Length: 386
Image: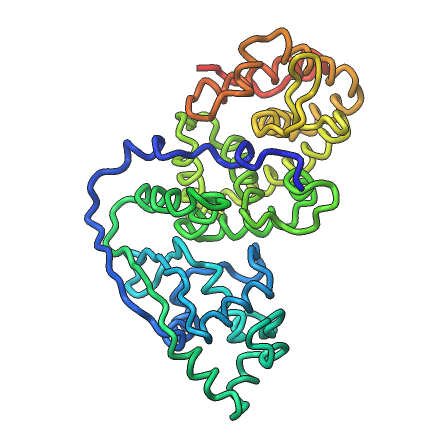
């Protein structure tokens, strides 16, 4: 089990944050029943926005996907799929709910690498070990093929939507009673482009982010895409801190839009920022050891990792000169951090504040920068706290 609190590491986003951006929308909700054959055809035509293979964060195991396929063959009702039609591409859809079900059909139909073989079935045991094509080619299994291909899956489609905030609100409510995925999954679909591809791939390959989110033994990218969210957040704060106004969701969305549009120009700075995050996180681990990224409170380090502490460490230790000076005097840096957490009331409270005010973010970055500058003797980036 992960040692940190998942919610504390997810992006600060609530329905209240979206309220100002949402009004009665002109979206039309349309329902239809698509057969499995129709959905597979749509998948083959690229009509659903599913992640490219190299970016994929699998949530379901093949065993769970196989049980879903079995349910379809048996005629057991399955949950509906909820989609938003892209306003500039009629017939192409963002998946708000049901991506894993669509991925299961995609994998089984052999449209994503090696075709998936059914496994772990306890009712239709005769289908274990078989791919979709092998079942279709076996005349003795014609009844199972017909049952699968003719099975209907309910699809609810949002058309003509005007505001991305409506999609975020829909996403939040759909995930309110389940293990939530990061809103980064929706952001990836809303803001595709070269920057987003870079962020997804780079974060998936980051050993430091794997360790931060999953522990020292973690080898897989985060299925909730929080690693990509952390990277985008770091890049946004590094390159656009003066533009931050207190709405993190909007700030990150705007950053993705700008970086996608100006990728040829900004890509060197983005790469430097991403490398800086990796080096800064590695340095923080070296300096603080098992207490890295934790707040110091009541004479001890908290057990949970803290995103605000990560922001502070990453923002300033990405600078090579500051990082080298900090690494040369790790005990002094640790004591300075503990002192700031204990004696600087504004810094202490800023580490537990949300990102919903500009001052909370600027205060934590500004105070830690000045403390780090004092203890290392190296000037850090000056952060205005208003």
